[in-house]
Image (tube, rainbow, N blue to C red; front, side):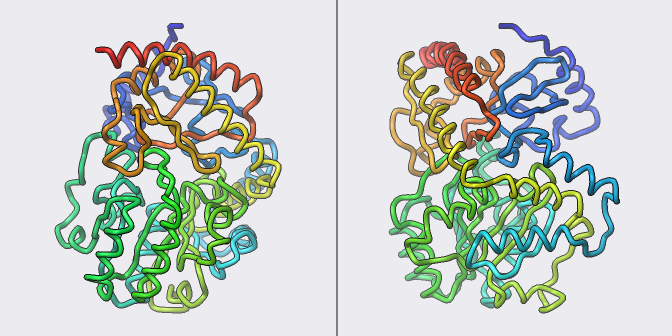
Length: 438
């Protein structure tokens, strides 16, 4: 079907006159897929509407935090009540204490939580803590893992960087880059060799427990456990970046669901997305021994006027209170249904692809082999994805506008939504097949 997008087109033209590229985050610009980004004005449950009144089933969910669906009545009520009392105090408030207690209750190794306003800020703080705790400078990351846009970590990142074809970013100094060592993801031999050669220089290893910013790429068996062991043996810290996975994959995040039986825990966690329920909240968390290095207890400085904002933390707490075992079971089931419906449609159209998942995170790579690292992800058929994306969007299903992103379901997704997604996927698969032949 042909949508009217006159309003989105007009808004984007206006936006480009006052905002770089017309967007406040690069992937939103549709540079990787072409066309005009939609300007959304309303969401309810599993659906969103743009300025032209077009309705979409939402498989982006604000990149994860709309885990209970858009405008959930209980979340709206808590946010409205908090906002009526004041948007901000720049001082302590009970809501941040309650949210911190909820996080500590859910994740056994955590004893302290420091709130910030974005995932980038959380990771930046974790890196500073690791360097202070170890007295070392070197940070190890994996190609394709995205940990925000702080200078030290914007090196071979995934997500928007990959979508725009930027291997690194101008403005990142040589000094920052040389303190970041990048290894191929899922390459345990490379990690072992690095620790053998430079273990005493390494302050921390940081990874997403399952990368979701180059698409979903599950770790090989024992990979994260090996990181923990190598870091501990060398006196380095292990930072587990659960900004995408924390409290979306389970009540305790990825670590609680997939790692507790292996008997290890990271030194620091970073969180975002779900803990704010769509509002700007993130956190760094870990043991008291490390976290109490932060001022005012210790001498590692970090501050933020809006950190622990009472409205945002009210939204986060209300969202987490709705995230019970029944919801996680629903999310896992819906992710499986949607992924299989799309995979079936692509197979029927003869489109090479790989459906990959971890918990309720999933993505579709347009390639005929399983993706194990960033190099594999980059080798996929981007024109086929782009054609698929636009056909889905034109027929009322919003998926991430990038071949390098995870897809997200919500607890509000219905049986009828799943059926509709499957029907639209058949149309989009034909478009992808045609693009593959060009």
